Amino acid sequence: MKRIITATVQDRSGVLNRVTGLLQRRQFNIESISVGPSETEGISKMTLVVEVEDEQRLEQVTKQLNKQIDVLKVSDITDKAIVARELALIKVASNSQLRSEINGIIDPFRALIIDVSKDSLAVQITGRPDKIDALIEMLRPYGIKEIARTGLTALQRGHQPQVNDLATYSLLK
Image (cartoon, rainbow, N blue to C red; front, top):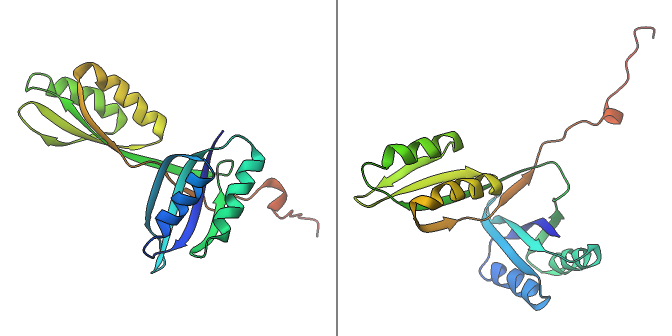
């Protein structure tokens, strides 16, 4: 089962290597990993998508990550309310006659043409991975020359009150 794990870490040399090394030693396959600065100076946020066989192995990996000296917090956010996005750059074979046809394909995906050359064009798309996969399949007949994807980046949505969190009010009080 695929799991989305976020880790808040110290922004220091070697942290990424130690995290990926731990996962590699435990034989976890990292499907994607994205790392970048957080809202706090000196702190980075990692988003890892890993393949895990069962809950026990998931618990093992989160505990092992929490033991790392530069790791401040680890969360499995797969089953929580999250916002998740990915960026892809796709270079497609194209000539001047096909450009308007390709533009018509990418427009409903809210993708942008970011570079044009004599024999190709580069498309930028952001969104859920399934949206990116769908666009790639639509562009495949034109001849995809190159694809670069960032991997998933995710965060939890703001607190959404549950029914039992809402205060009850009465006009009879």
